[in-house]
Length: 231
Image (tube, rainbow, N blue to C red; front, top):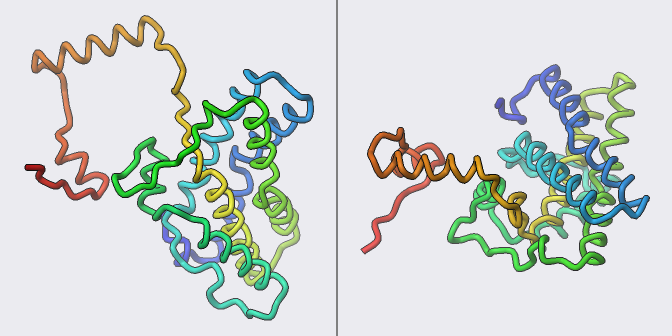
């Protein structure tokens, strides 16, 4: 993916159009509607599965953006003051590094990662609904709506730059909201018999030496992880 900070104006506008049309925002609307109807836990859980996955998909567009979103802003403008307050909150409450967050999105935790203490699957029904209501009310959603309107008005490059900064900080706020919670979409699910059969077959092929495998060194190289020798 191209470096966001090096995109030309056309590429940057295309990125913004992509971001505001990501599935996350459609899933949020569905989840909001279910909460408004006081839908059963099963329905909420099924939609939250998509909401969480769509959040991760959205994050992939922005995960390597390391530019300070406040850099170059006039500090005396209302938007700059608002973003400064939000960034201070983010930096004060964030517990993970960019690398740790990237691994979390793959369902993995680095040894350095402070494991989240709360498991979503263990929340009480009331706690679960409270969490979902707080997530669908996150800042990123009204910010996205304003950006949709702005994109329809043939805005200047400067206006889009400001809008992206606001969207990015709002995205970071959503990240922080998720950070204290562990969520495994497969946790608590039972394997279907055919899945268990395929797993058993794969294990048998590995033990027989007939399976195509990838070495640990190759995996480490792919993800840029240095292996340490344990003695």
